[in-house]
Length: 119
Image 1 (tube, rainbow, N blue to C red):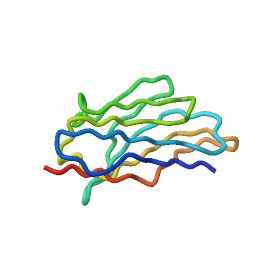
Image 2 (cartoon, rainbow, N blue to C red):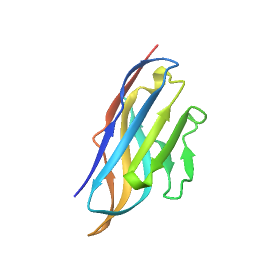
Image 3 (tube, rainbow, N blue to C red):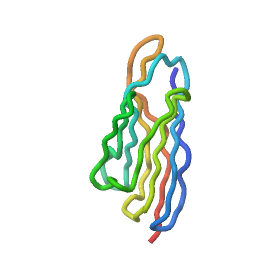
Image 4 (cartoon, one colour):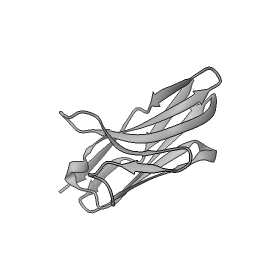
């Protein structure tokens, strides 16, 4: 079994910063892409940022220049540094990872962490 556990969410004022973490554990052989998604109330889940195993990154236009995705392959952990936060960044943030285990390769989701940005 594989688990993804997110942490680091919370309440912050507009203009502030938060750092999210996503730790993967279990019978992991390798992790391919890791990504952060978010879902605001009444909206569809959207991709925020993705990072490959080699460190290449892509971002949603709405967060470019403000958010930075990174990963520590030795610790099976991904991070999302969020700066200059805006009220419209308020959402539940989910970690997603493409993981190869001893049995198969599949996509996994974390439980989500709430980020609330007050104006």
